[in-house]
Image (cartoon, rainbow, N blue to C red; front, side, top):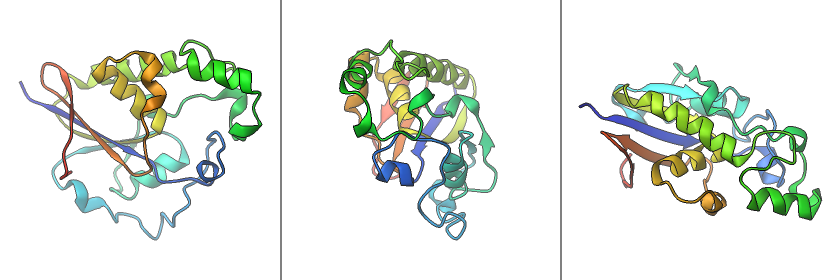
Length: 184
């Protein structure tokens, strides 16, 4: 059986991240056009470049190549009415409920459980597609992929920090594995 290699790259930093706000369809902070293809040599072997539909993932994908294809399963969490909102301005009980109950969605968007299910279903489709997939996406999607592979309790979801432009390497060969590697 051939191996499926999934490299998840978190999009570059955005103004809303810097301000402690929930994401919206904002651009990245860096001069992504001036930096286009600057990371294209990082993954030299044949790979499929996928990204979420948001501006920040499409722009970040441009750092790795000009052949990115939008994959809607890689879209960010739907934060409903919280899009663009300052996290510190939310009612603390509502925010705490959302942070501790993976099934609730007080913002009217997706729950953590729904995000994990969506990402897990997409990853199942990759199991029969050997080769390297380079996927530019969001912290919530990367956390959901980690949950799918590691099968830890959903209460651990927020204990994973995903930094801008960080890489998470997953491999499938009869089962998904997390691969820690100092050389991408």
